[in-house]
Length: 259
Image (cartoon, rainbow, N blue to C red; front, top):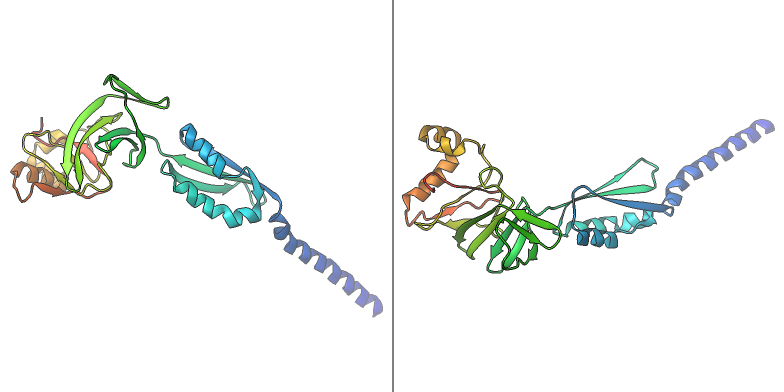
């Protein structure tokens, strides 16, 4: 009987040691060094890379990251140049935390009375820049990082914003265009005699779009909302001079008869 109790005591002792070990692994793990590796999914300007490195520590502890990690993520996502931030571990017990950052890329230049700005394909204003006088229209370079070619001009004005002259570089208007003026240009004014451009919410199939638009029946079947906008412009009605197109994603397309 004494030997049996002694044997049970040994098993219980080993079980307690095992339980303490299981409970202690996370506790100890919270204080082990954790390496944070930053990777940029897309090309990023050097000033953004430097700012991210200053914000994210190279080494820390699991506990510190649990307390501060979300705040760091929010700070990174608050940067206008950063489109997305993703955290990922290599494995369950890995001491390396991979931080993947997708940065925004300039796709056009917008010149307003307030200044000249770089914007991305979603219409997000990234950075105010300056274009030196005397630079040709064939190619414009902004600093050492960004150069654009193929310059188009278009004019538009709307309620709640000043008349604007846009310099759109790097976008072929009839093939790839996603550009917005200001934060939310819900009202665009089209004056008779001006070059007319329509701002659509989504991009229709652009190849052959203008030729199909000339066929009214085909346009009614495929592009009802676009035809309606064209009709509002063609009527030149004073009451319908303002066309409500308050959408986030817009394309720039010449309507029928605009030249």
